[in-house]
Length: 301
Image (cartoon, rainbow, N blue to C red; front, side, top):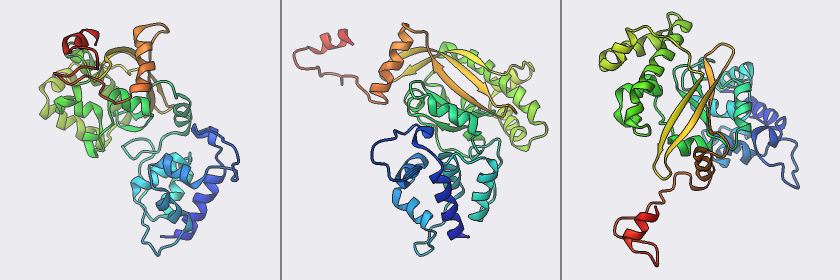
């Protein structure tokens, strides 16, 4: 592993990015032209000390960045595909596929748009519905995406194999979502051709889910570009939102975001979401705020 070259490369990429490009405030008394080390660490989900050791290029502390760490740094530093590949080569790690899989390199155009969607839940996913990156509001609305690998990284796979995946959606809406997911997957499978990843996932789903098998055999196909969803939030209740998808040019990644008409209840709930996040504001049974009985408290909720 060429740690000195790796550290030098990270420093030059950090210096070229302005805070506003990644959704950070410029702030006063900034002494560096680009991002600070701690800012890169924050964006990549790393400790500041660990990232500092990477930039120093010293092997004395046994710094050995994993493929997952490198992928996170590539996203934080807005590397293009060639730069991402160079980063992996310097770290002597196998270069992952650029277009799909949970370690896929997020296309810079989609990532740039995601940075600007600070007031609406949004995430970038693959054509197999694997979450690559998401903002805080998306995590608050939908729950944090599990760190699965293999077929289970796909939300579509979990939808048909793990009942808990459906808990944030009203039961009466499940058949609709199932049809939409399968039709969208039909399009993705055809686009990928004889791709081993999607072929294996479809085979497993056909064995494990009679519902999936029946829908797959209808051969209905439709790329999901817009949908109306009801999300069951643990604090805010049912939130009705419009869901939009912006596809990359090759169709293998998409920016997904949620919005609601101005003045609607859904719009009001989205505003509240940024305040309450994942907090549970319900009143425990048998207790009530000062001055209210438990029954009165329940009526006010």
